Amino acid sequence: GNLATSAGGGGGAYKMRPARSTLGPMPPIVEDKSLMFPWFWKYQERVKWCYKHTYTEITVAMVIGGNFLTNIVESTIDPQKDKYEDVFGVFELFFNIVFTIELTVNFYAHWFAPFWKSGWNVFDFLVVTIGLLTTFKVPLPGPFTLLRMMRAFRVFRLFKRVPSLKKIMDSLAKAIPGVVNAFIIQILVMCIYSILAVEFWHDLGQDGYFINENNVTVELQTSRGQDYGHEYFGNFPKAMYTMFQVLTGDSWSEAVARFALHGNQVHISIGAAFFYVTFVILNAVVLINVVVAVLLEKMVDNGDEDMVGAASTMADTSTVALAPSPPDDAEPSCGAA
Image 1 (spheres, rainbow, N blue to C red):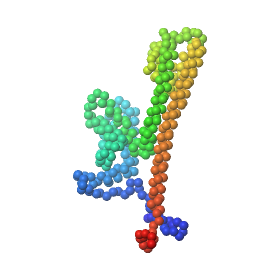
Image 2: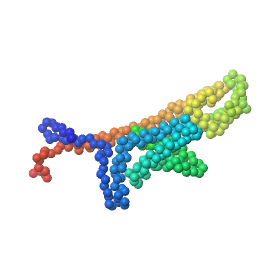
Image 3: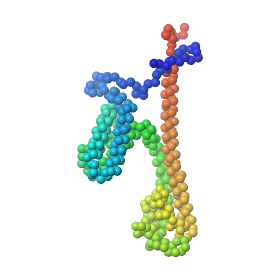
Image 4: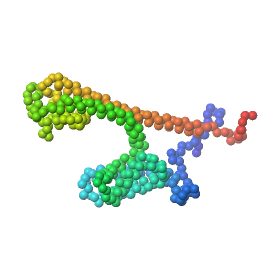
């Protein structure tokens, strides 16, 4: 029943409404004669209510997770897809049927424009369609056969079902402009360093030899039998990829920088050390953290907006719920006497 409290001891009673479900009660079946085929659309509101129910969300999320685990198991024990093709074919058929039914229900519940306005629904439609093409073994021309790989992305549909994951994806989407700007700055810095690297070391180890800091001529070739400078810094694309390798920290010190640091010219060795240290500090320390800061800022902003919206909703609800109710024997008043 309703909860009643009294304020100040002598005032009127304040009635608080009981908490309601987010979706509210199941809507009735109403046949709108103004619509074409009213007998078909009279269940739409009830289907939408059932589709958005928590139990439905959990069930679909579990099916999506099960499909993802099935793909993992298949890729582990049958990567060639020739040992247990029949077994995993049954699983694939089951998941395609379930996802098709789920998409059809969603399409009916949110007909027509509301369905296509959601990017998640468009993504669901593409993934389910590709799954059906795979099930019916529809031949696809040329590079379109790669579309079958979209089945691996079905797990992304979980983001629409789990609010916390959806919030992260929405934050990432809103952070794209700021992140793109940070990436542009980072790419420009990498391009500048790549151009300088071509100028400095494109001929290092030319003819397969290198003079070290002890003035000893040693053989210097890569494992592919090419000159060191030509392979790593021979032109801009090669130098760009080499600097990206430096940025990842993937064995770059021994493979890329050590030979430049141990040449027979001290000033070049010092310059090489300064070159790589500043590159790593600018890109791996400063600019990467700028990207992370932009992402965190957008997530915090979204969190603040959600808190403000929730606080506003609670304030409105409190204003209505705690409104003083008139005494049972009070006469309705039309104005001051």
